[in-house]
Amino acid sequence: MKKYLKITPEGTKDFLFAECSAMDDICGKIEKVFVSRGFKKVITPGIEFYDVFSVPCSGIMQEEMFKLSDNKGRLLVARPDSTLPIARMVSSRLKNSLLPVRLYYKQAVYRNQPTLTGRRTELMQMGVELLGVKGLRADLEILTTAISAISAVAEDFRIELGHAEVFDALSDGLDIDNDYKEKIRVSIESKNYSALNNLLDKLAPSKAVTAIRRLPSLFGGEEVIEEAAKICEGTKAQAALEYLHQLYQNLASLGLDDKVIIDLGLVQRNDYYTGFVFAGYINGIGDAVINGGRYDELLSEFDAPMGAAGFAIDTDAVTLLRLNDDSVSYSDNPDVLVYAEDGHEMEAIQLVQKMHDDGIKARFSVLETLEESEAFAKSRGIAKVIKVG
Image 1 (tube, rainbow, N blue to C red):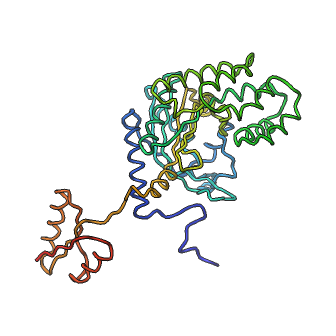
Image 2 (image 1 turned 120 degrees about the horizontal axis):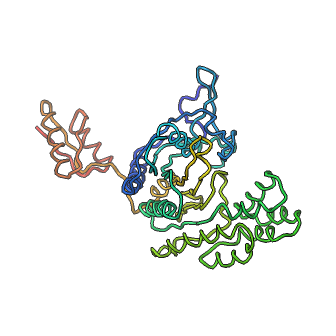
Image 3 (image 1 turned 90 degrees about the vertical axis):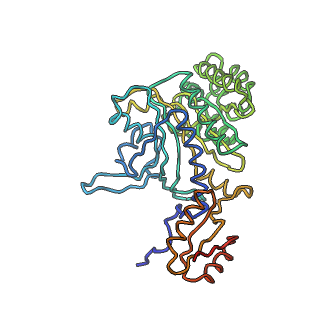
């Protein structure tokens, strides 16, 4: 039997040196934003019971989960999502906490990708959850926290803002089952106009069909709300549009109107979203690096009904972009290599510590001879070698 001793499983990788430094830098800047906004760090287990992710609104297909069993034969999964475990935690460990609760996390999630297509199965994420509160203030807190976090690691970004109730309200007026509704949703999300038209052409003409047909193209500034209001007039989607307009105007008052885009084709896959939804993009990264929104029904699945909103950041993608930036260096080279002659080792180590205290990057040479130390310094581009003794 072949032994896989020198490779990692498909979709995973080792992180080395500069990669780790870049990730620490990115995550540190994001974490500083979260802490400044009053969010407290939590860590959930890397493995959870399958039942946590089998709730109807999880939006996670069982084929996407890595499964295993414990010594009692119970089905477990490697954590495919962080929001659901936090919902479990809040409903049990934090059920008597004073609300609202502000939580943040930094941990890996694991998604089985049957076709891979360049996607990873292990992803590092950071995110926040604001639980036990609803309303405009809570939603603005989540959105501005997300914008502050992405601003801390990138200058050229945009936030696409939508509302789950727009599509839900319009599709509820159609005589279709959930499978057909999902096909329509996927077509809108991917902006596949051909597939969407084929699906809608099979339905009886109605105001809802006309409005849904337009959703993928309703993308832009404040004018999108006005245009959508005309085609959604008289439907339940109107209230969602009005609330979305209110969110947009508040963000625009901060001078963010050039960063925030209305996208009524933003129909997130996770069924637990019940209100505003948003995605964040950074120039140079094709996929969204932030996804989030309001999910007020999710905690009811854990017998702890309460308002909830949050988002997750794909820190791996941001790290990779930063590593490709030639203007940023994550070199760990010291300025000075300190070599000790025999009997002077502790003197050299103390000198290295003093240099560090003075702001000089120094390293103690563990090589046996001065010649070896000098050759090492030359090969690594270390400018100076000091001999002690």
